[in-house]
Length: 61
Image (cartoon, rainbow, N blue to C red; front, side):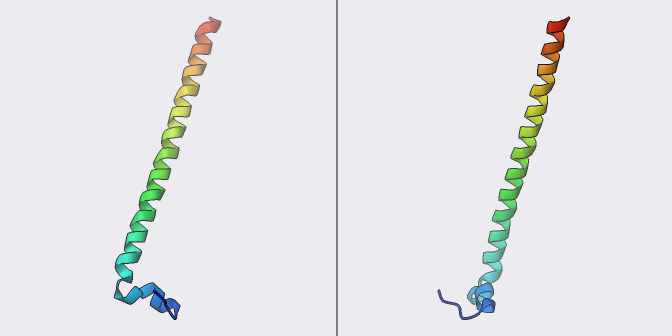
C-alpha cells in the first residue's frame, strides 16, 4: 500500500477508524498488563521484605 499523504495513511482507504481503534485497544491492553505486572511485583517484594523482617525479629528474641 502506498499513500501519497499523511491524511491517506490515517484514513487507510476508509478502514482507518477500525485499524486505529484496534491499535489503541492493543496498546491499552499492553499498558494494563505491564501496569499489573509491576504492581504485583511490588506487592510480592513488600510481602517478602515484611516476612524477612518478621523472621529476623523472631531470631533476635
